Amino acid sequence: MHNSPQRREFLQQSLAAATLWSLLPDSLKAEERTNVSLSLSNFTVDITPPKGHSLCGGWITPVVDVTDSLDAHGIVLQGAGKPMVLMAIDWTALSNGAHLLWRTKIAEAVGTTPERVAIHCVHQHNAPFACLEAQAIVDAQGDLPHIVLEDYLHDCIDRIAESAKDSLKAAVPVTHVGKGEAKVEKVASNRRIYRDENGVIKAMRGSSCKDPKIRAMTEGTIDPMLKAISFYNGKNRVAAIHYYATHPMSYYGDGLVTSDFVGIARKRLQQEDASCHHIYFTGAAGNVSAGKYNDGSHPVRPVLAQRIYDGMTRALENTEISSVKSVSWRSIEMLPEVRSSFNKEDLMKVISNKEGAVVSRNRPSYMLAWLNRVERKQPIILSSLGINDISTIHLPAESFIEYQLRAQKLAPDTFVATAAYGDGGPWYLPVKEEYPAQGYEVRVAFCEPSVDDVMTAGIKKLLGV
Image 1: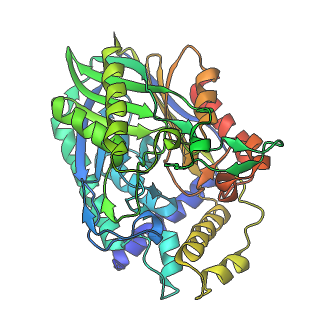
Image 2 (image 1 turned 90 degrees about the vertical axis):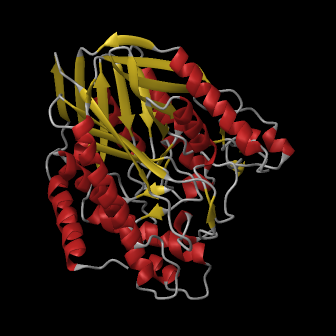
Protein backbone atom coordinates (compact mmCIF):
# COMPACT_ATOMS: atom_id res chain seq x y z
CA MET A 1 0.00 0.00 0.00
CA HIS A 2 1.50 3.33 -1.05
CA ASN A 3 0.91 5.68 1.88
CA SER A 4 3.91 8.01 1.68
CA PRO A 5 3.40 11.51 3.14
CA GLN A 6 4.12 13.01 -0.27
CA ARG A 7 1.31 11.00 -1.91
CA ARG A 8 -1.18 11.82 0.83
CA GLU A 9 -0.24 15.50 0.77
CA PHE A 10 -0.62 15.69 -3.01
CA LEU A 11 -4.06 14.08 -2.93
CA GLN A 12 -5.19 16.34 -0.09
CA GLN A 13 -4.00 19.41 -2.01
CA SER A 14 -5.82 18.21 -5.15
CA LEU A 15 -9.06 17.68 -3.26
CA ALA A 16 -8.73 21.05 -1.56
CA ALA A 17 -8.17 22.74 -4.92
CA ALA A 18 -11.24 20.99 -6.32
CA THR A 19 -13.33 22.17 -3.40
CA LEU A 20 -12.30 25.78 -3.96
CA TRP A 21 -12.87 25.43 -7.70
CA SER A 22 -16.41 24.19 -7.17
CA LEU A 23 -17.27 27.35 -5.23
CA LEU A 24 -16.64 29.49 -8.29
CA PRO A 25 -19.69 30.58 -10.31
CA ASP A 26 -21.01 27.95 -12.69
CA SER A 27 -19.68 29.29 -15.96
CA LEU A 28 -18.38 27.97 -19.22
CA LYS A 29 -14.63 28.11 -19.75
CA ALA A 30 -14.14 28.44 -23.48
CA GLU A 31 -11.20 29.28 -25.70
CA GLU A 32 -11.19 29.25 -29.49
CA ARG A 33 -8.23 29.94 -31.76
CA THR A 34 -8.08 30.52 -35.49
CA ASN A 35 -5.04 30.45 -37.76
CA VAL A 36 -3.42 27.97 -35.38
CA SER A 37 -0.21 26.01 -35.79
CA LEU A 38 -1.51 22.80 -34.30
CA SER A 39 0.82 19.95 -33.40
CA LEU A 40 0.22 16.47 -32.01
CA SER A 41 2.18 13.93 -30.02
CA ASN A 42 1.05 10.55 -28.76
CA PHE A 43 1.87 8.12 -25.99
CA THR A 44 1.06 4.56 -24.97
CA VAL A 45 1.67 3.00 -21.55
CA ASP A 46 1.06 -0.57 -20.42
CA ILE A 47 -1.17 -0.45 -17.32
CA THR A 48 -1.88 -4.18 -16.99
CA PRO A 49 -2.52 -5.10 -13.35
CA PRO A 50 -0.32 -7.65 -11.53
CA LYS A 51 -1.46 -11.13 -10.57
CA GLY A 52 -3.84 -11.13 -7.63
CA HIS A 53 -5.07 -7.60 -8.25
CA SER A 54 -8.80 -7.04 -7.91
CA LEU A 55 -10.89 -6.74 -11.05
CA CYS A 56 -14.11 -4.75 -11.44
CA GLY A 57 -14.08 -3.42 -7.88
CA GLY A 58 -13.17 -6.64 -6.10
CA TRP A 59 -16.33 -8.69 -6.60
CA ILE A 60 -15.23 -10.94 -9.45
CA THR A 61 -12.23 -13.25 -9.71
CA PRO A 62 -8.96 -11.28 -9.33
CA VAL A 63 -6.13 -11.44 -11.87
CA VAL A 64 -5.12 -15.03 -12.61
CA ASP A 65 -3.35 -14.41 -15.90
CA VAL A 66 -3.20 -11.97 -18.81
CA THR A 67 -4.78 -12.74 -22.17
CA ASP A 68 -3.73 -9.39 -23.66
CA SER A 69 -2.44 -6.13 -22.21
CA LEU A 70 -4.39 -3.19 -20.85
CA ASP A 71 -3.06 0.12 -22.11
CA ALA A 72 -3.39 3.87 -21.73
CA HIS A 73 -3.46 5.67 -25.09
CA GLY A 74 -3.31 9.42 -25.40
CA ILE A 75 -2.61 12.38 -27.61
CA VAL A 76 -1.40 15.85 -26.69
CA LEU A 77 -2.48 18.74 -28.91
CA GLN A 78 -0.44 21.97 -28.80
CA GLY A 79 -0.69 25.31 -30.52
CA ALA A 80 -4.20 26.44 -29.51
CA GLY A 81 -3.73 27.86 -26.04
CA LYS A 82 -2.50 25.55 -23.33
CA PRO A 83 -2.02 21.90 -24.35
CA MET A 84 -5.07 19.62 -24.59
CA VAL A 85 -4.95 15.92 -23.73
CA LEU A 86 -7.31 13.13 -24.76
CA MET A 87 -6.68 9.72 -23.19
CA ALA A 88 -8.46 6.37 -23.10
CA ILE A 89 -7.52 3.64 -20.63
CA ASP A 90 -8.42 -0.05 -20.62
CA TRP A 91 -9.90 0.05 -17.12
CA THR A 92 -13.42 -0.42 -15.82
CA ALA A 93 -13.54 2.98 -14.10
CA LEU A 94 -11.40 5.78 -12.66
CA SER A 95 -13.39 7.74 -10.11
CA ASN A 96 -13.49 10.79 -7.87
CA GLY A 97 -10.11 11.72 -6.34
CA ALA A 98 -8.25 9.20 -8.51
CA HIS A 99 -9.61 10.79 -11.69
CA LEU A 100 -8.67 14.26 -10.44
CA LEU A 101 -5.23 13.05 -9.39
CA TRP A 102 -4.53 11.60 -12.83
CA ARG A 103 -5.73 14.71 -14.66
CA THR A 104 -3.66 16.90 -12.36
CA LYS A 105 -0.48 14.85 -12.77
CA ILE A 106 -0.80 14.80 -16.57
CA ALA A 107 -1.58 18.53 -16.66
CA GLU A 108 1.53 19.28 -14.64
CA ALA A 109 3.63 17.06 -16.91
CA VAL A 110 2.59 18.74 -20.19
CA GLY A 111 2.12 22.29 -18.93
CA THR A 112 -1.64 22.66 -18.93
CA THR A 113 -4.56 22.69 -16.48
CA PRO A 114 -6.63 19.70 -15.29
CA GLU A 115 -9.82 20.75 -17.07
CA ARG A 116 -7.95 20.49 -20.40
CA VAL A 117 -7.19 16.81 -19.74
CA ALA A 118 -9.95 14.34 -20.68
CA ILE A 119 -9.45 10.80 -19.33
CA HIS A 120 -11.95 8.08 -20.22
CA CYS A 121 -12.15 4.38 -19.46
CA VAL A 122 -13.02 1.90 -22.17
CA HIS A 123 -14.87 -0.03 -19.43
CA GLN A 124 -13.79 -3.62 -19.92
CA HIS A 125 -14.66 -5.64 -16.79
CA ASN A 126 -11.66 -7.96 -16.45
CA ALA A 127 -9.84 -4.76 -15.55
CA PRO A 128 -9.26 -2.47 -12.53
CA PHE A 129 -11.96 -0.23 -11.04
CA ALA A 130 -10.11 2.57 -9.22
CA CYS A 131 -11.50 4.81 -6.49
CA LEU A 132 -9.12 5.97 -3.76
CA GLU A 133 -11.92 7.13 -1.47
CA ALA A 134 -13.73 3.78 -1.70
CA GLN A 135 -10.42 2.01 -1.17
CA ALA A 136 -9.88 3.93 2.06
CA ILE A 137 -13.38 2.98 3.24
CA VAL A 138 -12.97 -0.76 2.61
CA ASP A 139 -9.39 -0.70 3.87
CA ALA A 140 -10.66 0.51 7.26
CA GLN A 141 -12.81 -2.63 7.52
CA GLY A 142 -9.78 -4.89 7.55
CA ASP A 143 -11.48 -7.94 6.00
CA LEU A 144 -12.46 -6.81 2.50
CA PRO A 145 -10.42 -7.35 -0.68
CA HIS A 146 -8.76 -4.23 -2.04
CA ILE A 147 -10.48 -2.18 -4.71
CA VAL A 148 -7.22 -0.88 -6.15
CA LEU A 149 -3.64 -1.24 -4.93
CA GLU A 150 -2.37 2.29 -4.43
CA ASP A 151 1.23 1.43 -5.36
CA TYR A 152 -0.02 0.16 -8.70
CA LEU A 153 -2.33 3.14 -9.31
CA HIS A 154 0.39 5.70 -8.54
CA ASP A 155 2.96 3.81 -10.60
CA CYS A 156 0.59 3.85 -13.58
CA ILE A 157 -0.03 7.59 -13.45
CA ASP A 158 3.63 8.40 -12.85
CA ARG A 159 4.59 6.44 -15.96
CA ILE A 160 1.74 7.93 -17.98
CA ALA A 161 2.64 11.49 -16.98
CA GLU A 162 6.30 10.89 -17.85
CA SER A 163 5.35 9.35 -21.20
CA ALA A 164 3.03 12.26 -22.01
CA LYS A 165 5.80 14.71 -21.17
CA ASP A 166 8.37 12.81 -23.25
CA SER A 167 5.97 12.71 -26.21
CA LEU A 168 6.15 16.49 -26.56
CA LYS A 169 9.66 16.15 -27.97
CA ALA A 170 8.28 14.21 -30.93
CA ALA A 171 5.29 16.43 -31.73
CA VAL A 172 4.42 16.73 -35.42
CA PRO A 173 2.41 19.44 -37.18
CA VAL A 174 -1.30 18.82 -37.78
CA THR A 175 -2.34 20.45 -41.02
CA HIS A 176 -5.62 18.67 -41.69
CA VAL A 177 -8.39 16.94 -39.77
CA GLY A 178 -10.77 14.23 -40.95
CA LYS A 179 -14.24 13.05 -39.96
CA GLY A 180 -15.80 9.74 -40.93
CA GLU A 181 -18.41 7.28 -39.75
CA ALA A 182 -19.75 3.84 -40.56
CA LYS A 183 -22.59 1.67 -39.34
CA VAL A 184 -21.57 -1.24 -37.13
CA GLU A 185 -23.67 -4.32 -37.78
CA LYS A 186 -24.90 -6.64 -35.03
CA VAL A 187 -23.02 -5.40 -31.97
CA ALA A 188 -24.93 -2.77 -29.96
CA SER A 189 -28.34 -3.42 -28.43
CA ASN A 190 -30.24 -1.68 -25.66
CA ARG A 191 -30.08 -3.48 -22.32
CA ARG A 192 -33.43 -2.12 -21.08
CA ILE A 193 -35.74 -3.69 -23.61
CA TYR A 194 -37.89 -6.21 -21.69
CA ARG A 195 -40.69 -4.22 -20.01
CA ASP A 196 -44.15 -4.80 -18.63
CA GLU A 197 -47.30 -3.05 -19.82
CA ASN A 198 -46.42 -0.01 -17.67
CA GLY A 199 -42.93 0.32 -19.10
CA VAL A 200 -41.22 -1.06 -15.99
CA ILE A 201 -38.14 -3.18 -16.63
CA LYS A 202 -38.81 -6.90 -16.16
CA ALA A 203 -35.32 -8.19 -16.96
CA MET A 204 -32.05 -6.74 -18.27
CA ARG A 205 -30.35 -7.90 -21.45
CA GLY A 206 -26.78 -7.66 -20.18
CA SER A 207 -23.41 -7.73 -21.90
CA SER A 208 -24.24 -11.33 -22.73
CA CYS A 209 -27.66 -12.94 -22.79
CA LYS A 210 -28.64 -16.60 -23.05
CA ASP A 211 -32.42 -16.10 -22.99
CA PRO A 212 -33.60 -16.57 -26.61
CA LYS A 213 -36.79 -14.62 -25.94
CA ILE A 214 -34.93 -11.47 -24.81
CA ARG A 215 -32.25 -11.85 -27.47
CA ALA A 216 -34.96 -11.99 -30.14
CA MET A 217 -36.31 -8.60 -29.11
CA THR A 218 -35.50 -5.45 -31.09
CA GLU A 219 -32.14 -3.70 -30.77
CA GLY A 220 -33.91 -0.80 -29.10
CA THR A 221 -32.41 2.66 -28.74
CA ILE A 222 -28.74 2.65 -29.81
CA ASP A 223 -26.35 4.70 -31.92
CA PRO A 224 -25.29 2.30 -34.69
CA MET A 225 -22.57 4.59 -36.04
CA LEU A 226 -18.89 4.30 -35.26
CA LYS A 227 -17.24 7.68 -35.68
CA ALA A 228 -13.59 8.42 -36.41
CA ILE A 229 -11.66 11.69 -36.12
CA SER A 230 -8.32 11.70 -37.91
CA PHE A 231 -5.33 14.02 -37.69
CA TYR A 232 -3.01 14.54 -40.63
CA ASN A 233 0.46 15.93 -41.18
CA GLY A 234 0.15 16.74 -44.85
CA LYS A 235 -1.04 13.52 -46.47
CA ASN A 236 0.08 11.32 -43.59
CA ARG A 237 -2.53 10.25 -41.05
CA VAL A 238 -0.75 10.41 -37.68
CA ALA A 239 -3.62 9.69 -35.27
CA ALA A 240 -7.19 8.43 -35.42
CA ILE A 241 -9.70 8.44 -32.56
CA HIS A 242 -12.61 6.00 -32.79
CA TYR A 243 -15.92 6.31 -30.93
CA TYR A 244 -18.65 3.68 -30.52
CA ALA A 245 -21.29 3.18 -27.86
CA THR A 246 -21.55 -0.29 -26.34
CA HIS A 247 -20.46 -2.07 -23.20
CA PRO A 248 -17.24 -3.68 -24.44
CA MET A 249 -17.51 -7.10 -22.77
CA SER A 250 -18.01 -10.46 -24.44
CA TYR A 251 -17.41 -12.55 -21.30
CA TYR A 252 -15.57 -11.87 -18.04
CA GLY A 253 -15.16 -12.96 -14.43
CA ASP A 254 -12.58 -15.67 -15.17
CA GLY A 255 -9.58 -13.69 -13.91
CA LEU A 256 -8.07 -13.43 -17.38
CA VAL A 257 -7.18 -9.79 -18.06
CA THR A 258 -8.18 -8.64 -21.53
CA SER A 259 -9.00 -5.50 -23.51
CA ASP A 260 -11.86 -7.62 -24.91
CA PHE A 261 -13.39 -7.32 -28.36
CA VAL A 262 -13.03 -3.55 -28.82
CA GLY A 263 -9.40 -3.71 -27.68
CA ILE A 264 -8.68 -6.65 -29.95
CA ALA A 265 -10.13 -4.71 -32.89
CA ARG A 266 -8.07 -1.62 -32.07
CA LYS A 267 -4.86 -3.64 -31.66
CA ARG A 268 -5.38 -5.34 -35.01
CA LEU A 269 -5.89 -1.99 -36.73
CA GLN A 270 -2.85 -0.56 -34.95
CA GLN A 271 -0.71 -3.45 -36.14
CA GLU A 272 -1.86 -3.01 -39.71
CA ASP A 273 -1.58 0.79 -39.67
CA ALA A 274 1.49 1.28 -37.49
CA SER A 275 2.29 4.83 -38.64
CA CYS A 276 -1.01 6.10 -37.19
CA HIS A 277 -1.82 6.04 -33.47
CA HIS A 278 -5.28 4.55 -33.01
CA ILE A 279 -7.32 5.23 -29.87
CA TYR A 280 -10.76 3.83 -28.98
CA PHE A 281 -13.32 5.61 -26.79
CA THR A 282 -16.53 4.03 -25.50
CA GLY A 283 -19.51 6.29 -26.04
CA ALA A 284 -22.56 6.79 -23.83
CA ALA A 285 -23.24 3.08 -23.36
CA GLY A 286 -24.73 2.97 -19.85
CA ASN A 287 -27.80 1.21 -21.24
CA VAL A 288 -26.24 -0.41 -24.32
CA SER A 289 -24.39 -3.72 -24.68
CA ALA A 290 -23.88 -6.57 -27.14
CA GLY A 291 -26.44 -8.77 -25.36
CA LYS A 292 -28.69 -9.33 -28.37
CA TYR A 293 -25.76 -10.69 -30.36
CA ASN A 294 -23.69 -12.27 -27.59
CA ASP A 295 -24.53 -15.43 -25.68
CA GLY A 296 -21.32 -15.20 -23.65
CA SER A 297 -19.63 -18.14 -25.36
CA HIS A 298 -15.95 -17.83 -26.18
CA PRO A 299 -16.30 -18.04 -30.00
CA VAL A 300 -18.36 -14.83 -30.04
CA ARG A 301 -15.50 -12.57 -28.90
CA PRO A 302 -13.57 -12.65 -32.21
CA VAL A 303 -16.83 -12.24 -34.13
CA LEU A 304 -17.65 -9.04 -32.25
CA ALA A 305 -14.03 -7.88 -32.63
CA GLN A 306 -14.29 -8.34 -36.41
CA ARG A 307 -17.47 -6.24 -36.54
CA ILE A 308 -15.85 -3.40 -34.61
CA TYR A 309 -12.73 -3.65 -36.79
CA ASP A 310 -14.90 -3.45 -39.90
CA GLY A 311 -16.61 -0.35 -38.51
CA MET A 312 -13.26 1.30 -37.79
CA THR A 313 -11.83 0.62 -41.22
CA ARG A 314 -14.99 1.75 -43.03
CA ALA A 315 -15.16 4.95 -40.96
CA LEU A 316 -11.59 5.73 -42.02
CA GLU A 317 -12.44 4.95 -45.65
CA ASN A 318 -15.41 7.33 -45.43
CA THR A 319 -13.34 10.17 -43.99
CA GLU A 320 -13.72 13.72 -45.29
CA ILE A 321 -10.54 15.77 -44.86
CA SER A 322 -10.20 19.54 -44.43
CA SER A 323 -7.45 21.90 -43.42
CA VAL A 324 -7.40 22.97 -39.76
CA LYS A 325 -9.00 26.40 -39.50
CA SER A 326 -10.18 26.73 -35.90
CA VAL A 327 -9.57 24.90 -32.63
CA SER A 328 -11.44 25.30 -29.36
CA TRP A 329 -11.57 23.75 -25.92
CA ARG A 330 -14.62 24.20 -23.72
CA SER A 331 -15.21 22.95 -20.21
CA ILE A 332 -17.91 23.33 -17.63
CA GLU A 333 -18.26 21.96 -14.12
CA MET A 334 -21.34 20.24 -12.75
CA LEU A 335 -22.29 18.87 -9.36
CA PRO A 336 -25.47 16.77 -9.55
CA GLU A 337 -27.74 16.01 -6.61
CA VAL A 338 -26.79 12.90 -4.70
CA ARG A 339 -29.46 10.18 -4.46
CA SER A 340 -31.81 11.20 -1.66
CA SER A 341 -31.87 7.64 -0.32
CA PHE A 342 -28.15 7.75 0.50
CA ASN A 343 -27.47 7.97 4.23
CA LYS A 344 -23.99 7.73 5.75
CA GLU A 345 -25.01 5.71 8.79
CA ASP A 346 -27.04 3.24 6.75
CA LEU A 347 -24.25 2.80 4.21
CA MET A 348 -21.68 2.20 6.94
CA LYS A 349 -23.90 -0.45 8.53
CA VAL A 350 -23.94 -2.39 5.27
CA ILE A 351 -20.22 -1.90 4.65
CA SER A 352 -19.30 -3.08 8.16
CA ASN A 353 -21.60 -6.12 8.11
CA LYS A 354 -19.07 -8.95 8.25
CA GLU A 355 -21.74 -11.43 7.15
CA GLY A 356 -22.43 -9.59 3.89
CA ALA A 357 -21.10 -10.60 0.49
CA VAL A 358 -18.16 -8.63 -0.90
CA VAL A 359 -20.23 -6.99 -3.63
CA SER A 360 -22.93 -5.93 -1.15
CA ARG A 361 -20.24 -4.28 1.02
CA ASN A 362 -17.90 -2.87 -1.63
CA ARG A 363 -20.61 -1.22 -3.71
CA PRO A 364 -21.87 0.94 -0.80
CA SER A 365 -18.29 2.16 -0.37
CA TYR A 366 -18.58 3.78 -3.80
CA MET A 367 -21.92 5.27 -2.77
CA LEU A 368 -20.39 6.72 0.38
CA ALA A 369 -17.42 8.03 -1.59
CA TRP A 370 -19.81 9.85 -3.94
CA LEU A 371 -21.87 11.24 -1.05
CA ASN A 372 -18.71 12.57 0.60
CA ARG A 373 -17.55 14.06 -2.69
CA VAL A 374 -20.78 15.96 -3.25
CA GLU A 375 -20.57 17.27 0.32
CA ARG A 376 -17.08 18.65 -0.31
CA LYS A 377 -18.31 20.12 -3.60
CA GLN A 378 -15.75 18.55 -5.93
CA PRO A 379 -17.34 19.02 -9.38
CA ILE A 380 -17.38 16.79 -12.41
CA ILE A 381 -15.88 18.40 -15.49
CA LEU A 382 -17.60 18.16 -18.86
CA SER A 383 -15.40 19.23 -21.75
CA SER A 384 -15.25 19.40 -25.52
CA LEU A 385 -12.58 19.68 -28.19
CA GLY A 386 -13.69 21.52 -31.31
CA ILE A 387 -11.86 21.51 -34.64
CA ASN A 388 -13.63 23.15 -37.57
CA ASP A 389 -17.12 21.58 -37.57
CA ILE A 390 -16.08 18.66 -35.37
CA SER A 391 -16.83 18.51 -31.65
CA THR A 392 -15.99 15.85 -29.13
CA ILE A 393 -18.14 15.61 -26.00
CA HIS A 394 -16.52 14.21 -22.84
CA LEU A 395 -19.10 12.80 -20.42
CA PRO A 396 -18.71 11.08 -17.05
CA ALA A 397 -19.46 7.56 -15.90
CA GLU A 398 -22.10 5.29 -17.41
CA SER A 399 -24.09 7.90 -19.29
CA PHE A 400 -27.17 6.63 -21.12
CA ILE A 401 -27.15 6.58 -24.91
CA GLU A 402 -29.89 9.24 -25.00
CA TYR A 403 -27.32 11.88 -23.99
CA GLN A 404 -25.18 11.03 -27.00
CA LEU A 405 -28.13 11.07 -29.39
CA ARG A 406 -29.38 14.30 -27.81
CA ALA A 407 -26.00 15.99 -28.40
CA GLN A 408 -26.14 15.08 -32.08
CA LYS A 409 -29.67 16.48 -32.44
CA LEU A 410 -28.71 19.69 -30.65
CA ALA A 411 -25.97 20.39 -33.19
CA PRO A 412 -27.11 18.81 -36.47
CA ASP A 413 -24.51 20.69 -38.53
CA THR A 414 -21.66 19.50 -36.31
CA PHE A 415 -19.88 16.15 -36.40
CA VAL A 416 -20.35 15.21 -32.72
CA ALA A 417 -18.32 12.32 -31.27
CA THR A 418 -19.12 11.34 -27.68
CA ALA A 419 -16.86 9.69 -25.14
CA ALA A 420 -18.36 8.60 -21.81
CA TYR A 421 -16.87 6.72 -18.85
CA GLY A 422 -14.87 9.75 -17.78
CA ASP A 423 -15.00 10.45 -14.04
CA GLY A 424 -16.77 7.35 -12.74
CA GLY A 425 -17.90 8.85 -9.43
CA PRO A 426 -21.68 8.90 -10.06
CA TRP A 427 -21.88 5.41 -11.62
CA TYR A 428 -24.94 5.17 -13.91
CA LEU A 429 -26.41 8.37 -15.34
CA PRO A 430 -29.89 7.58 -16.68
CA VAL A 431 -32.12 10.12 -18.38
CA LYS A 432 -34.96 11.25 -16.14
CA GLU A 433 -37.62 9.38 -18.13
CA GLU A 434 -36.00 6.08 -17.20
CA TYR A 435 -36.16 6.47 -13.42
CA PRO A 436 -39.84 5.38 -13.17
CA ALA A 437 -38.95 2.31 -15.27
CA GLN A 438 -36.65 1.14 -12.48
CA GLY A 439 -34.30 -1.74 -13.36
CA TYR A 440 -30.65 -2.36 -12.50
CA GLU A 441 -29.12 0.79 -13.97
CA VAL A 442 -31.57 3.07 -12.16
CA ARG A 443 -31.22 1.09 -8.93
CA VAL A 444 -27.46 1.68 -8.82
CA ALA A 445 -27.51 5.29 -10.08
CA PHE A 446 -25.99 7.65 -7.53
CA CYS A 447 -27.81 10.83 -8.64
CA GLU A 448 -31.36 12.11 -8.60
CA PRO A 449 -33.30 12.41 -11.90
CA SER A 450 -32.36 16.11 -11.94
CA VAL A 451 -28.95 15.03 -13.24
CA ASP A 452 -30.61 14.89 -16.67
CA ASP A 453 -31.26 18.63 -16.67
CA VAL A 454 -27.76 19.37 -15.40
CA MET A 455 -26.09 17.15 -18.01
CA THR A 456 -28.22 18.45 -20.85
CA ALA A 457 -27.57 22.07 -19.92
CA GLY A 458 -23.84 21.31 -19.83
CA ILE A 459 -23.91 19.61 -23.23
CA LYS A 460 -25.73 22.60 -24.73
CA LYS A 461 -23.07 24.98 -23.43
CA LEU A 462 -20.27 22.79 -24.75
CA LEU A 463 -21.89 22.75 -28.18
CA GLY A 464 -22.68 26.47 -28.07
CA VAL A 465 -26.43 25.97 -28.62
